[in-house]
Image 1 (tube, rainbow, N blue to C red):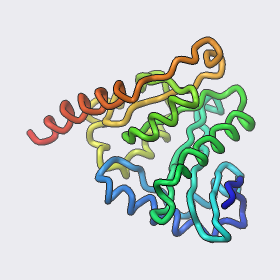
Image 2 (cartoon, rainbow, N blue to C red; image 1 turned 60 degrees about the vertical axis):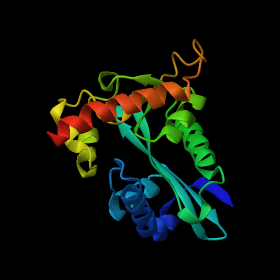
Image 3 (cartoon, rainbow, N blue to C red; image 1 turned 90 degrees about the vertical axis):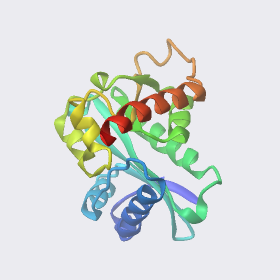
Length: 204
């Protein structure tokens, strides 16, 4: 298996990538923003994506989005094909895309919003810290991308101040000052609080 920077030649995998993301969202019942094949291909063409392949077979994927004129970048769309899950591949892809983002955009703050506890743990291991949405990009086109998520109504109800997702941020200027990792118990407690608060409101 190889994990490499995607390019134009990998456009043939765009359809299965989108399908895998959509299928995963349906199975988990959690918020995952859907993407079109054109959107995925554009990231490949700009070499802002990482793809994992096993002798030509699709294994996993993640891409970079640039926001606020390059002040922020997000590592989004992390996905692993069902045939390869449970083998630690997601972590390898996450590390690859994070290190590539730091190399390509060394001054940018790297951020993530996610409902997935495993992703929160991976982010924490890489030096991300939990933050409020106000500390993330103000670029409205980023938040507009959440419209395909099943929890978008929560984001609207809170005027984009919070959602079921947890915001996490890696600030290169502060990374060396604090290496303390956030306990997974903290993320679980935060997720439970949000689900209790917002899902109850949604049922009323």
